[in-house]
Picture (cartoon, rainbow, N blue to C red):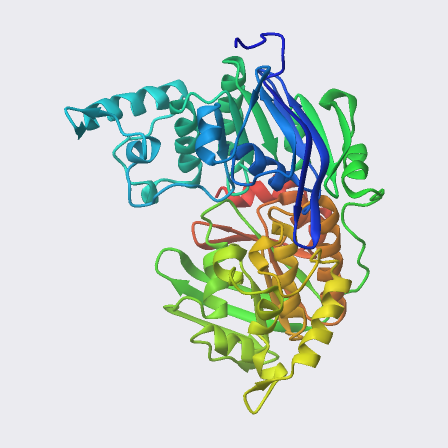
Length: 498
């Protein structure tokens, strides 16, 4: 049976999928044409990831059909998807860190000669792939030594080696610098020109208007809109995604910061963090920003005791704190919402309830016994308050969407009533509606007199939320902006590249 050249590159029709306690997809349709970038948008939990897992063979639908180039295909496993020309680059890369770039590209599909792996052929093919993508990467470099942007390119090279006709990119720019984002966009444009159909998932709406041709929006597992990008506005996209109008992207906050409560002086660890000092006042949101690798996350981990520091002093309310490990920080009233919520903020195999309780066992336990009734009552309050979408708090937290996982991490620190809250990339991978809710919670924490440190790579977020901004570069503080509301992105970038 020959393919229909006039047919879309991909057509998914009537896709339905239910999990215990939740209907994830309701008769969802998606169409992708050759040589186009289709933005797939929706709030966390809208069904985007489930739909792409159906396409990738990781999830089997209850009902629905898939056609590629006009031909029906049965995708029951990832191998079926690969044979059909589908390649998915997930937000968490599927690379083996200890293997080289070329070994990762051909992993499971090694080229052989006389029964042995033909490394020379693989190396030559890898170099040709990188040349096609316009980048210079040594194929013999272990992936653990590559930057995030380079690892992203290795994933794209894997897709090209598979002769993919359909490429799905899930939050591809989440950890890239602005220049790396532009490099990736050029790669995407080149792939479009070669006829690939690309599904692009991102919560950064400014990217959609720069790179996408059309947009499909899901909400609560259903199709709600489809349009050419040139025919929609940012406000309309937000309204489609959240089902309501968000008049302001950042909620207003009128509380004036009080006296200094939290002091960090001469914090150091090798070349990663060098003599970092700053203060946070009562009720203040201090923004900390800089390019990737500036030392922001490393400084936060030193404050929290996750890494051992070479030197430095941390004080709260005039009292010098001795913090050698996270337990000391927690007892001192410091909470850290980490950059990598899955690896550092959650135990994925444990339930939502167990993750909520982990940092609060001293509050919920009496003589070693957990007071389950109090634990469940307080969790229910935060599920309601944070609008965490979870059918049952006993289900593993890994089953939640990224945004709802972020809310679980946030809940476990809010229930402790920490006096210092460090938010490291609090809205990474979170949709616009959930972002607004998290911003409101940050404002509420500040209004109650707490010290809030918000680390973010998104300059509009820093400018929209912070009272004051500390900028880092190369492990050092390179400048401070006293009034964030009067600053511009250019003001911040001048300090970030020093």
